Image 1 (cartoon, rainbow, N blue to C red):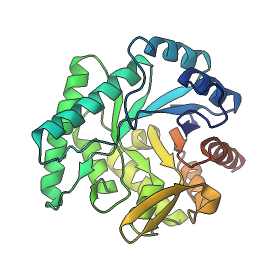
Image 2: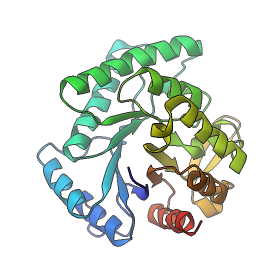
Image 3: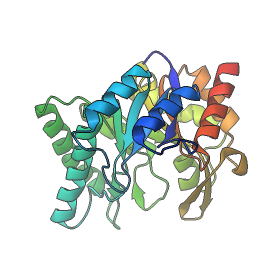
Image 4: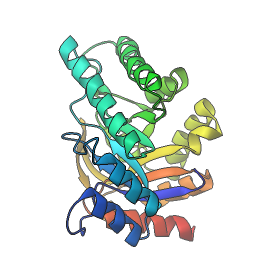
Length: 276
């Protein structure tokens, strides 16, 4: 990617009628560059519909990403649940690829009270199956396990970066609010944001920083981590320092606003980024 594009998690709120196609056009109208397809409850675009979405995204020069369903646990104790999780990621990746999407992200799983190293190995084996299936289908979409918002969830920065180093076509989806919530209020200064970006560059090279898929939102949290999303101004997230770090590290890729006021915060971040 040649620049950092800001976009919305799903169809902008003021889109009417609320269809994916109209959402893409609205994103363009707002001066934004990206939109995340929200498959969080189900993959809601059909194979037949995907070419139309692709055409509209290309005509409007909008980059699409996707958030796969929430019901994914690549470390489930039940084989059937692991198979269903793999299928959900594959289905999301196939449809997003047909829409000419860039990247599919998902929450990889839970520790389930197990030793983190054991969990890492289980998730890596199952993710490897996802990647090789897609590769065999000629689908080179970026597959992105996301940094998660609770200590009970697999997905701290080291785990996600290690998966990205060890598996082809895997890169991180970095959710800065999740870091902040997971650590009960840390990761909220320029220095700490920079440390995350430094870790990415160290493990994945410049390619890691020039091919980012990020989520940014305000967040409410407690001792156990993430509670719910807030708008940036309602939250304690030092988003100006975060945007400055992204600018200083010359980050490129896609930054998706997951705030309740998705397009307002996306536009605010874009203006901030351009002013710096």
